[in-house]
Image 1: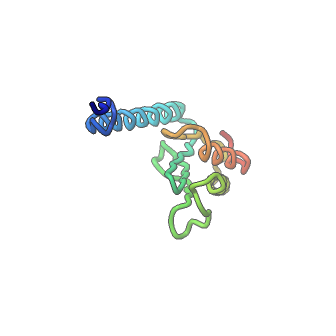
Image 2 (image 1 turned 90 degrees about the vertical axis):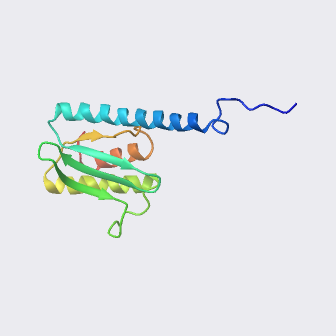
Length: 137
């Protein structure tokens, strides 16, 4: 009389775990398209697009009409003197740097594109640092 495992766990049913992974990925993609399409529909400003990984954070200002990147700041690579991007301090540094580069290019107003990420933690810190450095959104 051993203990029976439940059928719904990922250990006993790896196919269900894989299906759940696909559902979560699709949900993330839909969330990104929803926020991005809302920004593109207005289309009056360049967008400040943010990407976050576990170790790094990247921000770029994109002009969707010209299909051109106007400014770019990241914590990845040899030339990135912004430090660790896996924490809030790194996100603040990227936000300040992207704002400085944008203002140097003559861009003051942008639309914030958080992509599939929630406006929380490092994404929020980057946005607030960019606002304090002079970007309007």
